[in-house]
Length: 196
Image (cartoon, rainbow, N blue to C red; front, side):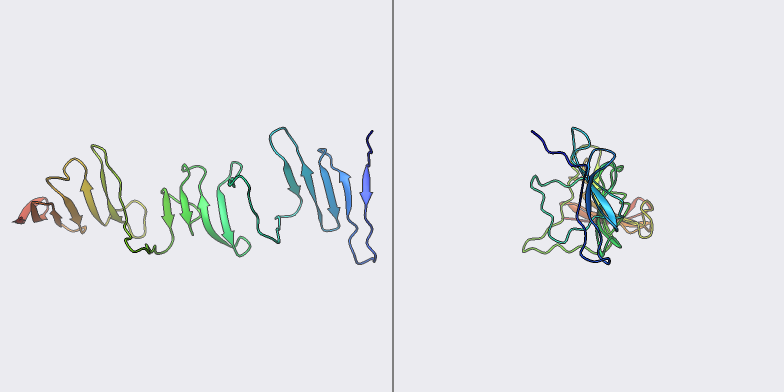
């Protein structure tokens, strides 16, 4: 036995109030309609339960808790924003692949931060892990561009035991040191060396 209703209408008590109604929408979802707009709810295929609306946004007046611990975007960048979307807090780029931006809408690296970073711990450390033959790890100063290298600090994996750390200020003079020496180079030529 089943009861079927084509429409359930709840009428407001005054002409100034909206008249909510519950109907069957064209795609066989349940539609909750008011004079301000509608929301359709239901399973529109075998994979998902769907929420549709003709409004620009959904609004939740309480905390949103996800039981399985995952929030994802369907073929779009995932963005967490504040101030009703006016300020982007975190962006995960779907095409990069998966670069993360904090205060950045189009991150170009695995992590791009618009602002300063504080490491606050009793033994805070910044670790650069680049450990295979033919590679190096370092810090680049690019200033107003992502690609132009004005200065750098490098550690070559293959020569780390002999050449040590290279400090390149962007001028012809560079400084590098290892456990056995400290030296100053000018245009690739050694000008001063202090052995340990």
